[in-house]
Image (cartoon, rainbow, N blue to C red; front, side, top):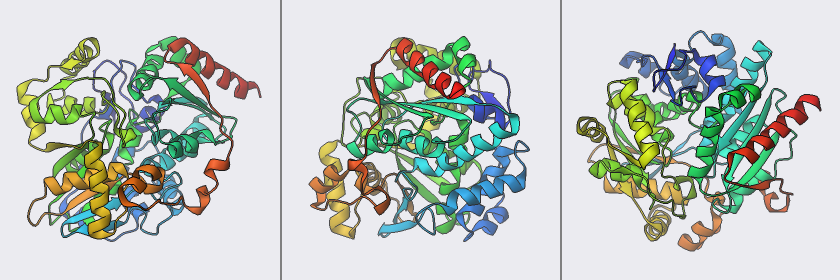
Length: 467
């Protein structure tokens, strides 16, 4: 399997190459040169298999010959043996045709663990094999940062610096990052929004001398390995509900578009995932695009679902590339226009192709609270604010006889204030995190400026290189 950039001017790489590169040198995102597909018989064989086996089989075409098959299978087993539920990604029925797929049974209680626990091991394997070290820099709106740190803390060949928007994550989300005391980890609270953090990460990658000096890599969903490792859980859910012999829909609360893109990729592999329902909060750029071809950025507004407080959805570029029939020059032109003007003039034909599969749903804070209350009242299900958006989206777009898989993206205890206000129940953290608010925090505050962040990363890398 080879990978190409959505903007067409970066080297073609194999899986190990895109894992270590993260963002392509031309500012684009790596995608498979061609999409693998399984026939119905192959999918049927995977029904009822352990999650690690499904993950190994689904990801195998994307990994190609970059990692030995037995080694890759062992990495998957090691990763998912550490999750807190025997099914890894259990389905919970909350209505006649609605099933929450709980993606939060990993160490940081969010769906990001499913990919990042594996990606951390993949980094270790490839870096050890090649005798290299890297510096990972990432932006988080809440969950990616803690999952990335949990995956990378203490790994000898990795330094990691995570940026989060100061005061715009939940206290649990922040503390899951900042209470990790590891020499190779640096947390930075940036005076700005998630989009500011994401822009700063991209600016570091765009600074070619700095990128090379630091051996930069990415761990958020601009890294293709993250998306590849999210595809298996949609496969597992669809198979459990009758695929490939029965269609399913998915409802995904999303801000950066990576989670729902993984569901779309699962459909490209031959699974009958027919409709992809994009759940959003008041930061509704994706919904406005799907409703009216209005891809225009507006100021980010804080909400009860902070992981979706995003107006620049990086992974949309991967879908855009496909909607434009893989025209890299056209993709690059539209992305440059969006960066320059805050608006993306997507051609009408491409927009209509998107709306044939994707549909949007938005929910404000009052609606999110009501959705959490309804889930508890009607099915005894305690949902976090993001999952509640997904449940409401599923209810709005339900079709007779077609099950809807709702991505349960975070444990309710990550947002205890919002959940308690909606349901009267204050969810407790699992035992492993029960003392989270007693742990010492380790982070610094910096302005949304490139130079001080680059200095901070240089200091981290230098200290661990010579320490």
